[in-house]
Image (cartoon, rainbow, N blue to C red):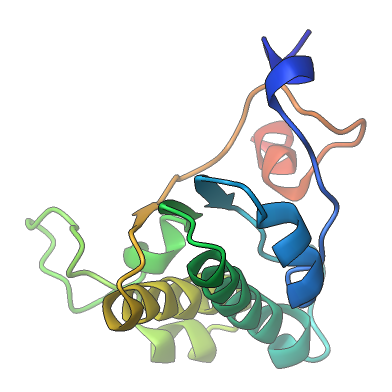
Amino acid sequence: MLLDGAPENLRLFKADVLDRAALAAAVGGCEGVFHVATPVPVDKLVDPESEVIMPAVKGTSNILEVCSTMKVQKVVVVSSTVSVHFNPNWPQDKPKDESCWSDKNVCMENELWYFLAKTVAEETSWEYAEKNGLDIVTVCPCIVFGPQLQPVVNTTSELLLIL
């Protein structure tokens, strides 16, 4: 079994992050929530705003609002290293920390739409948490790998195959 104790302790819900009612059904009764959903484009985008940016930012806002309403105690927002990595003005000898953000203009100029979406979504998370008193933490992994729960290779794992 991939996840020890999963049959007794884990319930999976299919929910569209743009559907607040579906999110509320999934979050009901939870003390903690991991928000990991963001579209990861593989091909060139026709409409980056509607294909990646809006779903990432609105989906994040939706889950945070639902968690506030449902009195969730802690939300873990899985961001990405791309939300802090692309800042050409950051001193090369200074470690990146919570004050470093990817430059949104650099992301737009280079059509790094996923990077822009993750940056804006994480900024939105912190703004919402501060304004509404929601206890959140963000993590910014470089790459996610390990046993997969789905039968197909996801976009992130494809990077490992290419390398």
